[in-house]
Length: 427
Image (cartoon, rainbow, N blue to C red; front, side, top):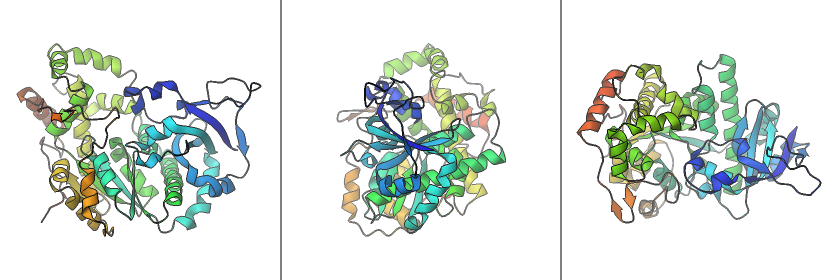
């Protein structure tokens, strides 16, 4: 049976820093005691503070605008949705899952076997909704592009609901592939989750029927499952060349301190640090580090190896999607460099290619480029300190490293400045 309870975020996520980037999990919350008679509990699944929801269809029709999909628990087979603190517009935050986690006041748990009845009851009211998925390599301006698209009067752009990350971890970060039954279940879970998210956002802004979801970069590995869940969705791929991606990532990791990066890599301290870090970081990074195809690559397996491999397999996955299903992947491909050069003009062209009407004043969109899209978060650029932007850390050692890794990988993506086959062309 569906249930509802008062919750609060665990303190570790309210202090900023790396923990805030942890994938969404239902154990991110603590139950809130309503009376002294209730037993104090450290788990939302063991608390006696829950309230049964006898008719989840009716409940969601009446309250769905307040609850957005957050995470799921495969062992308990429940989907969790949260209600944010009143007055907080979580959709406007740089990362939806962080805003949901930090401001959650109530947690709604819906069993998997109840989901079809709930989403079927909402389908008719969502007939005009069209979805877009904005995939990316990461560190390429995807949050910026998401914010720029959100300026459009017809578009709601939502940055990083974490359901897609969790599906990736379920599907890819494991020793064996999903069975056909597990894959079908993952598609259905995506379908139900996207339907519930669509309902929530449409109820709050009913005139903006085009809803774009910008997931974390690993979602490109489950883009085919997402497409099966929403067959009419249109896809965008935003990417960055390897030197730019690497430089942005490594400066973020080392907080813009080149001396720390230099000593860590020169003395090979990054190898030791990474071996410790891999025990606590999300499974998606452990998967990349243990990728069989790169097991014999003749480079040191430290920080550079992790992030260079991360970029290569993202780009390769995008290429393979284009080769396997060119009708859906990707309606529009563009690079970070194109985004910065052409700004609102290339976004308008992308939307035009996706058959999205664009009747806004482009100056509203251009204004978005003057504001740091990830400012105040753990993912804020390490290159920018005040008004100063540090120079690139990519030198001859890094470039040789890139070429060695790419040669060993031996895929379609064979150059650090690889250009996607269906990249946008500006007039």
